[in-house]
Picture 1: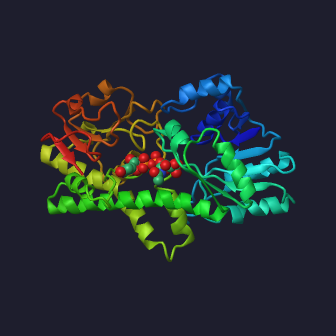
Picture 2: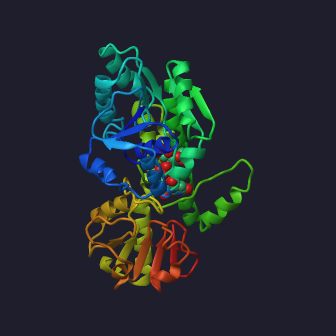
Picture 3: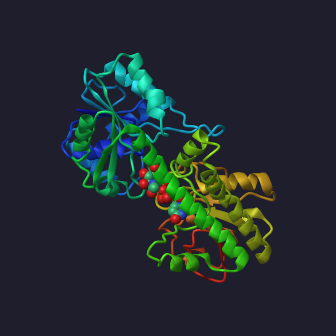
Length: 405
Ligand code: SAJ
């Protein structure tokens, strides 16, 4: 039996996927409300294909509880925030989960950490717990997740995976467990390499996006179309530049690279600069919006609306979202009314001046900043009538009322 600890964005789909492929799974989360919701037959976040997967897993007998189970394999997928000041990982949830697992795990159990962790986290924070508890019998594994929100269910099945283990035989056993549903290639390696590859993958993406964002700024100054430049440069067989945008959000790309900067502050300078470049984008969008307001003679921020609160299109996750960063910067720099905010994917009230329908949002607006290219608006500038559109995602076409990055 597998006990998945932490039923969030990664733990839940993983637990459901295993269960629906014939593995006996119990999902555990300390959040009673979340467990009650799942037990009432409702999933806890929106994701393509998750409803069907949930149904299949329930039909296969998955159960949800707040209790840790006695079983042969544990998969820990709890959050790993980072300390915003010293940029280092905060391992408290992993530590707590491992401690609790060790209290119930039978002899010879396998403990898989799926949460994203910085290189050496297992040596520094997890291994000492096992040693302290005299549990050399527990097989330690790191199996970092790789699935992208918006396409999680597909990627769980099709992505390649990494399994880092102290004991290669334990690694192969865990690889076989993941192979119950994973059709990608599974590389078995040691734990530190697995830790590092995960952070390196997200750092690669952060650096590539930072490059695109810097190009956008250069092209604006030079009077060039950055999208055309990138489109054509990418025709080169060895060039693959990502897209510039209003900033980088989510719980991964703007967070994980800081683990390297935090641990190697003297050395990881290039990575730090990339992160700073990405973090500068919401304020850059605000400056563009200001230019557009001046050009259009719009003085009152109450006439300006921000469309999109999530960190990217067609997800409901607002963590570290560029819009939240933009609103923070606005509060610091601008006065004269407050911008209205709308996101069809976000039902809860997350920020002041948030409205919950497109009609209410557009009423009396003269300008819209499209921070997220949800399918609702992508390629449909007519939805905004003759209002000015600030379009840092390049999803609204080329009208004369459209202001790009
Ligand atoms: N973004 C851009 N330009 C781009 C691509 C993305 O500005 O060309 C922005 C997005 O709008 C968003 C942010 O970057 O604000 C991050 O979004 P994302 O779609 O690039 O990535 P995530 O955070 O949803 O998922 C990433 C993925 N990592 C990689 O592709 C290397 C995913 O595979 C990981 O599993 C996930 O991080 C994670 O949990 O680590």
